[in-house]
Image (tube, rainbow, N blue to C red; front, side, top):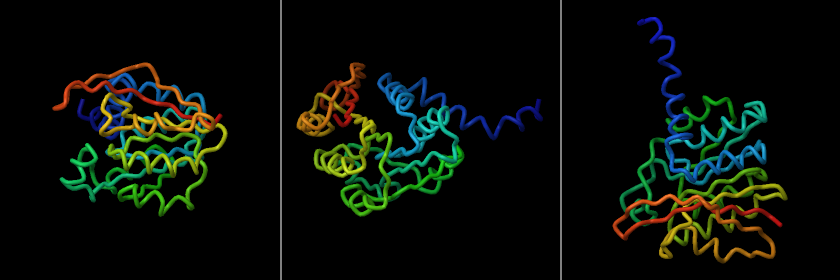
Length: 217
């Protein structure tokens, strides 16, 4: 029995993390995997990497269509730069260290580049060194300013088949993606509010949260 435990111990945590990401997440997250299966991405951008579990789950789906060494993952997060003020302003959570997250995601076999910092600065600073992306997930800072800025720069990374998924399209106009999504230029972009709604209690009341999907027309 001890020998069996020793064999399976190294893979237990990655398998459980994947299980939680796929099956224990809020129901709207199934749209991530459905849309990755549509676009077969080689280049994935995630704004809001946090603990890396979502990145691992997305890459594992992408690996069904591409060898892992052909998949490039780009992740932006505050990591250790997060502080109490930022956490409050962005309605966020404290992330693990960048090095721990890097190690976790690299175990998928994908090429991984993590960028630490506030995307109000880090995204424009790095935009010219990024390739066009096949799949983009925006789930970083939740302030109106941050999401509007993230969208402004993400547009530069889209090609004709790119899928952009926004989290936090919710019934609160003081934060989240609703204001940005509702003002997207629909003559250039197709916007779809995905129908699954997850509801959570917050100090302000019940939040009804959906994903929004944006593609070029």
